[in-house]
Amino acid sequence: MDVSGGRGQPRPGNDETPDHTGPRPPTTPEPGHPTDGPADRPADDRPDGAPAHPRPPAADPGAPSASPQPGPPGGTAADGTRTGPRTPAAEPSGGSSPPAGGPSGGRGGGRPPAHSGAGRASRPQEKQRGGLLMGRPFGVPVYVAPSWFLVAILITWVFGGQIDRVLPELGAVSYLVSLFFAVAFYASVLIHELAHTLAALRFKLPVRRIQLQFFGGVSEIEKEAETPGREFVLAFVGPLLSLVLSGLFYLALLAVDPSSVPGVLLAGLMISNLIVAVFNLLPGLPLDGGRMLRAVVWAISGKPMTGTIAAAWVGRALAVAVLIGLPLLTQSGALGSDAVDNVGMDTVLDALLAAILAAIIWTGAGNSLRMARLREHLPELRARNLTRRAVPVETDTPLSEALRRANAAGARALVVVDPDGVPLSLVREAAIVGVPEHRRPWVPVGGLAQDLTDGMHVSAELAGEDLLDTLRATPATEYLVVEDTGEIYGVLSAADVERAFVKAMARPS
Image (cartoon, rainbow, N blue to C red):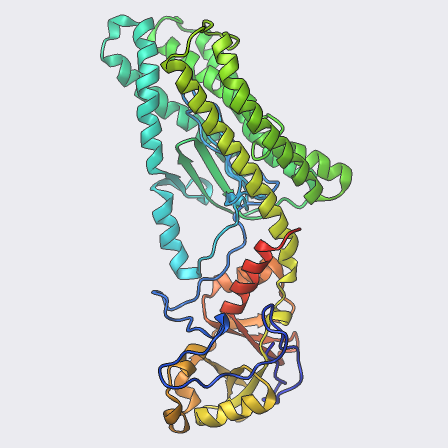
């Protein structure tokens, strides 16, 4: 790691990165030949000029995220996935809910984490992926994904046919009523997600966004709950709100004619929200019930990872049960429909729905496990261990002389200082590579340096998510690492952090 002493004086330090077992002086390639190694490739050749910084998972393994919610009457999945990776997102702690009948995601779930993106460039990309911005309740942006329009059409078609059988006098208007039902149903899914969001904000957990998509809603909570009790509350409030909504629709149904348009709509919303609540309470990740199970096991064992493993494997067993059991229950008539002896289109659709739900649950459970393992390894990402040794040079020092000093000191970075040794800027690695060797004696380092801003000063004590959050806040290719005393410790390359982040994700628990 790059370490230099304060006031412009180099000092010994750790120069080992995850991929380099010892200090390595900066290379001096021939003109037009880049240096080898991932850390030496130009980082500013990306479109935005900044490296892709690893982001901590948007969802945590155990936090409520996208909770799947079963679809409306007629066998279609209407609700969405709740937070989680999330994810995933992966979906770790902060979650997103799965489909209306789908799995819930995690805060950091989730959205396995899963992601590299840096500062300025990440925002527009995130909005582009989010879909249509509908508003910012409580300061949290709500997006409607393009896939929502597909499921709205599906719900309108299926539920419209049911309305036409109950109220044949409506004719084509029945499909307009069904479209209203689809919008109202997803409004209740949004309320489900807002419950998770408000609980997260109450616990001071940041929420990146809420997204309504094909199989439900996703609340992307960026941090993991600090205690199992908070984790349980975060997961439980979503299904609780769905149960409350189902009860309110039932009370409203008592005041109208069940065979009227309002009666049919209220009955459909009552049943759909009840299905959403019950489905999300099933005890397997990434559903809200799985996050509640995780919280219980966490409280008993004292280890969040133990809770995640238990809830994830229950989630996988649940996925198999849905895949096999849902078509059998439908065909047997146990869910209220007539028993079917032969294989028809309805049977095929039921099997397809079961396969989709099972895949969502299985994938969400796996994402939760991966994100939990990543969070276990995040503390190993320490600024002090990833920092490159640096030597101080003044602005007018020729590049060739600066590189000679770095080679002599076994350093791999250059810090431009004033005559008093106060750091002014960092010489960019990509800029050094771009200068032909025969010109280096006449090129001063000051012309290759990037001025230091407050955000480019990183404490040597930062580690894990705190380190990643700091780098995301100020995108750059290199950062000055300092001790708590203000003394220069070295230079941290974003490429080194990104590489260490990827290795942490691949490492088994």
